[in-house]
Length: 76
Image 1 (cartoon, rainbow, N blue to C red):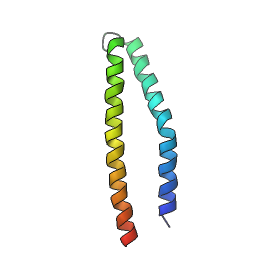
Image 2 (cartoon, rainbow, N blue to C red):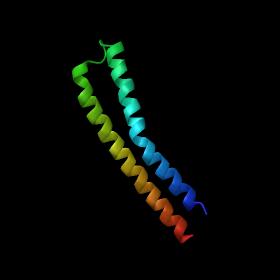
Image 3 (cartoon, rainbow, N blue to C red):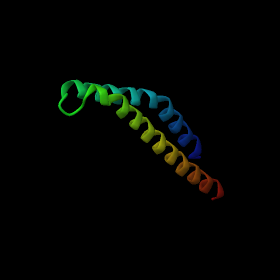
Image 4 (spheres, rainbow, N blue to C red):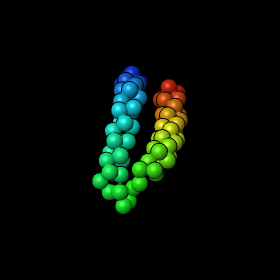
């Protein structure tokens, strides 16, 4: 069945998500250091908060769509 494969992929993604977010924060911090004319250090906390909010929204939408897909697969 396809459901165990999807489940393991979702689990793997959720486990690596904190590392992805941390890497993205490092990249943004480095951009602020490399290009201070475009990014100020004072803006970074707000940028990270916005990024976190957007990621939460995206993840919630993706999980909602996945729930609908799984329900459809179970009916078929």
